[in-house]
Amino acid sequence: MPFGKLTEAIMARKKNQPVDWETFLARISVGKTIAEYGANRNIFGQGQPADSVFYLQRGKVRLSVTSEQGKEAIVAILGAGEFFGEGCLAGQPLRISTATAMTDCTLTRVEKTLMARVLHEQHRVSELFVTHLLSRNMRYEEDLVDQLFNSSEKRLARILLLLSHFGKESRAEPVLPRINQENLAQMVGTTRSRVSHFMNKFKKLGFVDYNGGGLTVHSGLLSVVLHD
Image (tube, rainbow, N blue to C red):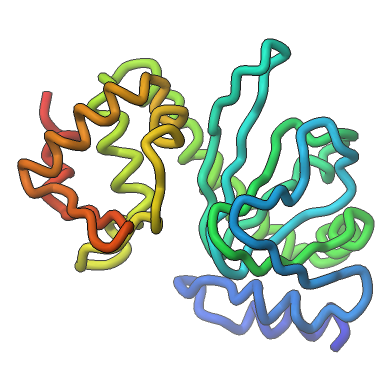
């Protein structure tokens, strides 16, 4: 289907409905590939050529940065329906982070030249893509403020709520199967022992549950974030 008709279909949607990016990308036949990645497999590495944009159809992906001294920091956890690797569209020649599949993932890889052409020619698609990225960047800014001004306990509580998609559903939801405390410590910016201490506290208070290796977060954890 021509890009013009695809854009018309998207514009016909109600403005308050999310864009069906998966359907849109599925109708592109050239310059796109579908890839499956198993858990713990690298999708791309820091320092590799930045030549494509990825759309995450299924699973969770971790973005991490490693310093020259070898210290690693997790900068984001992405879920289904998110793009990543878009820095190449802004002239980024090399990847500035490493993307790793945290669970089994299905990805759509779109070549840089194709994505740039679509965004240039189809203004409505470009507008929706930019809105998507701005929304994610706002979350990154909130993460930074959280890192600068809040305690380790509050940062951990907020991260757990974000990972459990708190606010999108009224029910409790698993964060990730077998998410380890080392990863949480890297995201919070503290030690594993501190994370272990807070997780035990949250469990005793009934804010989190461990079920068969998975972790479920309950809405009561919000009280930790809101408490002054």
